[in-house]
Length: 410
Image 1: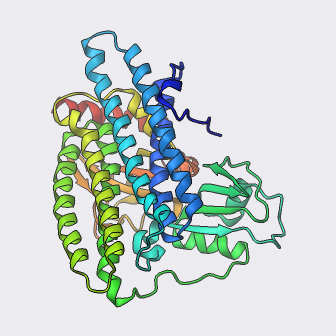
Image 2: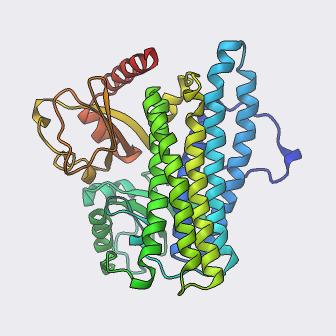
Image 3: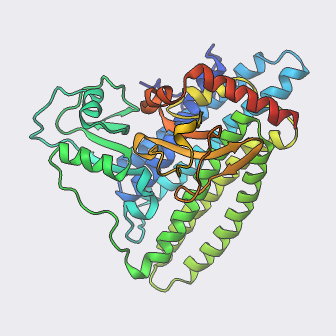
């Protein structure tokens, strides 16, 4: 699906690809790369780690094309001011991809890490799994869409490896066959249903961690999770033009820096880890810091009073992982975010706007919504129909425009 990126700088030449399409691919790939990098570590998968490296080259190539295309689109001072946000989104995506490649490099170095499991790095509502379609798979002609419809779940099949070939973000009409290796993201329940469909034993990934590595695993999870939440909030800041979100990211970046230093010291002093294991764990922590830095870089123009380019809203609505809005009505009044049931439908609530007040990353079990609240939500493209049922696209566009006007006037 992806054109091979030139490996040498002198092979690169201008191509008339729209800025929006370049940004969409950069965001899609950089987001994907982070999960693939961590999966390569968890499964010690050298081939997957190499694929992350190849994608990093692709991102470098796309950023150069975008720089040329954006330069041609700049006609006056107003254009130049707005184009800054596009450049920053592109460079931040590249920085995220560099961090992912650094994590994958640990696998390629073959120097080792202490035992980690999926539970150590991924939350229950956004698990990832590596599933091999068995040789005795009875429905060889099943398409991805047919599979998801039959299971009645939301799953994001990130990558399929078929023999020596990789298929990134496969189409819903892609036909599965025996031997395919699926890298899938979803809730614990949806992934377990997929395993049962393939007659694969369902194991309990949330077993107790080894005592000697528990704090290391928890520290890595906190760094990874916080840096990725920061990216979500950065995209939200660009979508809503909210300086409050940008300031929150600034606070979180300082928090991640302090947390990383404390964690790295704890790793260095750990008695059970070898010197190489310590080095590799610290490298992952540094990569998480770099992702947090990328989130801050993304919103720095907003903090300096530069308005985000309108094209960014289109990008965030059309990528594989999307940001949008849903308004609460009388039937939702008094429900907690958990009781809304969005998690089982592949939708994550990032923030709530009530009047002119923001509740950023509110607690799922304690926060109760009111009629008129506007939820900022994240979801995969597979959930687009569900989001459309909850809130029509034209209504979502109108709500976003109103929020943008109110935030920018402030």
